[in-house]
Length: 337
Length: 259
Image (tube, rainbow over all chains, first blue to last red; front, side):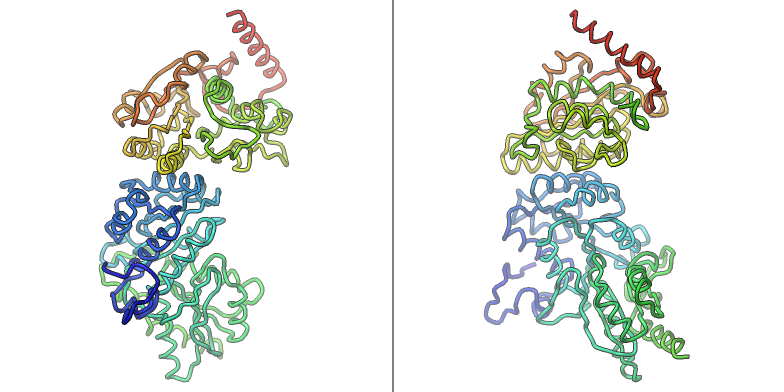
């Protein structure tokens, strides 16, 4: 990637972290995350990059710039995560990069005890989340990672919506204290944010006002699809609010309760199992003090064995714009019946 | 601690007593009980966290907290849980789930190497613990990064919860395995204070390589009825057993005193 190194925009060059910058360089969310990691490392020498033989997914630039702060553990995630905890206990800030299918699940207990219980200041970046590894089969899909992550005390859980948000989420993860999981993918098509992305951990973002129902989405692809679904619904006279709930933990209950109270119907959208992810989080929160009818859109409780491009997976599971619009319309009709 | 509490891991605690004694009372570990988080200290990770009775006794006797607090072991409201909490002074890493300590030790050692600090990382492992694959991932990592500031000590008492290690899941040839992973290995009698001391004062055994000390020990050492048996891997001593155990230990002390 020949991308400008730091924040200052030069003549004709869009500001780093903006939609124009992402577009100019054709950056995916993983790539903007990697650029943000290098930016963190430039600012603060406590940052290390840790890999498990997947550094070729954008990690080599960090290695070239900071060779003494780049550590590859080979194909050994327990060693990777354990060492991340040790580095953090010694005052470093490890940035742990691997596929989402391995990041929390392969070495789950090391994440649970060594990182989360000790509040180790380590950041985990899982790429190819959801069904992004569309052709690769169930071994490389990560449809359970949010459920695992949500169950771990002390862990902050973030799923940015596009490459712009991924850049700002990475900087925010680096700036906060304690363990963080950032859910990513190579997806370069989602465009949600423009020149600004008001990213703040724990604060959902209302992308579109609306009063008939609320679409709550988190993560790459589906937030953009939810926005497109709202456009489709608008064409039929349905006024859908859209919330990017990029932080699953801690959850922005206030924003959710307001949306539920004001619109009376909540549809969640995630590229994750319908068990234990975004839908579960929102249902748990609203069920206590502000119960409203809900629809939980996501992947059924089953492994996905179909070989297909990512867009086809989204269509099949009804989490593309058309599928979301259909589900929202049905839910609205049932509510009004 | 094994009599007044709901029970303790008697066997693995007793086998590790001399190892802990030499680490904490013979000038091996550069730690200061008055400043448990002192900059530049050696890090100590007791990876076989189930043997917490021995660890807590060593920490208390060394002054990390009051010896009287040992009486609260596993009692309601105590911080002395069966497997160590992270908040106990002198505990760098909460352990108990086996196979974690060495990998975390590597991270501490990597940070020390990066910052050119002289501290060492000492990790005590159980032998049964070495059946965990994560131990060997970490063994590979320590050798790969030439972490000669990592010292692992295996309490090779030969017995695990279900029986002898060689019957449950054979570890031998144990030293050869570590050598094949490119560690510098030494073996000593793990109840011989002088031998332990000599070895642990000579780390690293080889510059540029992590050090492994296999301490050949007896599970339940010093308590006649608990020695070399998995029956006392975990248990609660009855008043009669407590009396017998204390008499055994007293006899042992008199024996050692004569030497």
